Amino acid sequence: MKIAVLRERADGERRVAATPETVRKFGALGAEVAVESGAGSAASYDDAGYAEAGARIGDRGATLAGADIVLGVQGPDPAELGAVSPGAWIVAGLNPFGARDRVDAYAAAGLEALAMELMPRITRAQSMDILSSQSNLSGYKAVLDAAAAYGRAFPMMMTAAGTVSAARVFVMGVGVAGLQAIATARRLGAQVSATDVRSATKEQILSLGAKPVFVENVAGIEGEGAGGYAGEMSPAYQAAQAELVSAHIARQDIVITTALIPGRPAPRLISDAQVASMKPGSVIVDLAVEQGGNVEGAVPGEIVERHGVRIVGHRNVPSRLAADASALFARNLYNFLSTFWDKEAGRPVLDAEIGDAIRLTRDGQVVHARLLGA
Image (cartoon, rainbow, N blue to C red; front, side):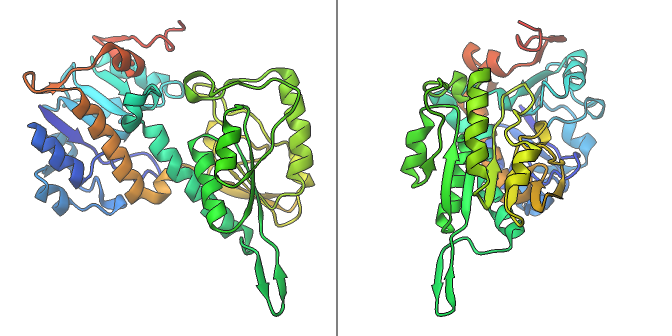
């Protein structure tokens, strides 16, 4: 069983899908690991570290030759996988709804594409969940990016020259990224409030010492929503939330938006008029900017200014913390493969619950129900 680890080719991608730690663990399972030269350099993992862990270092062709499993952070270009035999697994974040042509190409090549971002949110799969591990870092980094763009202090400071008021931070969307954003902003001394459409998050917000801001008298999503994600809300709820947010957002110094709906464009949470209501010098960080954006006027990869408000739209936020993001991502992949490792077969064998949830292609066909319109 040969596992290939590739150097990422996507613009701005600094992460790597395996670290010396996970290479060593794969070796203990009996797998041969080949790492493309320079694969981890942008994340502070050098070739020598991989070689010491037992990996073979080579160019892309040698790394892929005879590979049974190809690991990536983002899906590799199918045109560059010619050395991989039909039936090999591609295990990565594959963006199946935004890169359908690539999925079709994997199928045509006879590859079995496994989209790790579709991992079901069930207890036994928590350690395999790349969305959670990477979103956690995104929430943390969003607060640091906001602090850098804000240009003022976060905590209240009482000095002989007078008092500096604490920054007011409003987090919209209380998933993994939002919860970490709340916790980080609180640690920096900010006055934090947060909102979500899922009623169960109110207790989570309170547990972190923040103020929940919720629509009253209009039904939201009870519990956690399907699969732990929020769904789309009724027009009545959207209108009530917009009114509530408009009044609250005008008093905030920093807003961080994190709302995503899997397989669909990000919901619009902040309009241009709401941006205009904020004080000059305020900051908005849109973590959903690459999926269409929560904020009107946000631009992927740029920090723009509208009405005196800075709107931060960094791409690929986890990659801005490449070493830690790679370590967590690599452990997710190792946890996934090792959980299903069959010692007799000398390879992982997936069960139906998780296999059917993440498998996009098999035997030359696209097989995932959502991609087939089921």
